[in-house]
Length: 248
Image (tube, rainbow, N blue to C red):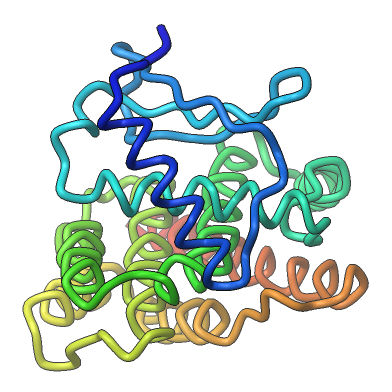
């Protein structure tokens, strides 16, 4: 279903203008769509000669709608400029080969793919934070705070993904000087790592540091080398949880 009401199209036009003014022009034809059945906020995909930005119905009511559209357009910008992080052929091949080499099953490979999206997103959001207003940056800070969980489930994949998601949320804010080391977000993250196992904090710190330092301008060779390093960190979390469960 395509959303054609003028206000939403105005939001798209404004977002494109802000990106162009910031030095990130989008060359593709953009179509903004609304999917009433989408369970997450939105995504971008290439369809024929156009890029579709698809958002959920409930995202229309979110304070983060403008930020969401900027975020998806920033993905398109990276795709247009040929960023290694947005070359699906090479990244899929690398992750698939890595998973096979490590003997990971389908669900474990899915965990790697999910966590790879966190790497993509921290790189993309450098653009978004650059063009955001101060009010929008504070909204984004609250948004990322909502990503952090303090509760451990006891299930390997769930808790491994939770640890990486927490690291992604804190790294996203640290990259832009918005993280409060003494705030509720930090308390929840600390609660999680304390409950997740003896090495959880060091695993968390390593992944967070990697995401804080990730470079949107890595060459293809450097990106592939660092992606492999990131996958090693992710599997380290997974293996740690499995070993703890084996001891129970």
